[in-house]
Length: 312
Ligand SMILES: NC(=O)c1ccc[n+]([C@@H]2O[C@H](COP(=O)([O-])OP(=O)(O)OC[C@H]3O[C@@H](n4cnc5c(N)ncnc54)[C@H](OP(=O)(O)O)[C@@H]3O)[C@@H](O)[C@H]2O)c1
Image (cartoon, rainbow, N blue to C red; front, side, top):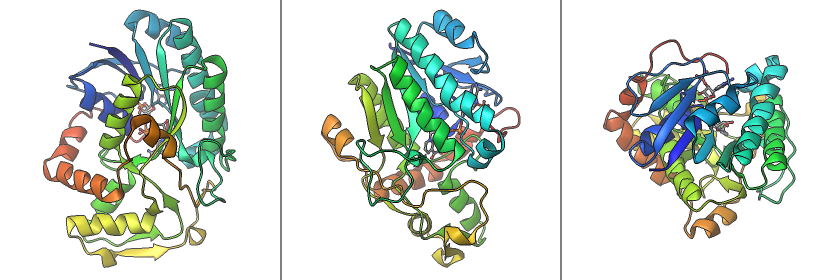
């Protein structure tokens, strides 16, 4: 069985990926502040920004693959602590990528759609990024460091939703939690994205790892939509009252970090590498509905031990 080290294992992607692949891979998951319990894989607790940790972990685990899902993802927290964002999103991926290259370990780095400024219609891998906030700037610098020190690395620019440890990490959980209680919410009608369900993304990452793809890929849904439309589609699938969602403009909401409003990414490159289309929205939302009906959300939250939702 292939041994894989997953950083950010307490996060939305790291946890879903590790649970989903634990029977296929020998998974070692690294968490920082959010301790997990009773998970079907090995756990390592460390702060990856500490100098010797990366080499030490790779030498003791000896993985064949490293999947780097660890990041400082909260946009406003990144604005408030730019130095920590730089350490976690830029320096740490570079260190991991270099240490992996030195040991012949395949390195997979997770990046973001947010490295674009949102001023164009669509973005392919050939388009020049222009990040407009600290999170995006540090993530783009992370991509660049990874490729400088490890040209064989795979970088996936993603955006996703699903069930998280806290039950409130993703946009789907935000809509679900409010609408299921009959509460009104606002949805941005002028912010566009192409999210995948995290479980779909995990399967696609497995295929990319098995094919040992190298370089940069946009790994998102083939269908892009506004955040408001995403909420409406979700409400319809769950039979919630879609009138509870008020369409608003992001200009009308006071946000600390600037956001890119149009993150429609082209998926041609990944589609031709895998020989299939990226899933459309209805497929992901239907799978999310079934997971929630089957108690998957509660089962994910049952792995939680101490406080989560801490910045980082
Ligand atoms: N969520 C999205 O829609 C989205 C969109 C675009 C790109 N991405 C990218 O996808 C990846 C995964 O995102 P996510 O939403 O799953 O993240 P998340 O839920 O915010 O989790 C982040 C993870 O990083 C870990 N971490 C942070 N600082 C660390 C440190 N110093 N040492 C070790 N671990 C550390 C956290 O550990 P603790 O919680 O244990 O402290 C946590 O497991 C990230 O690269 C993110 O930039 C996400």
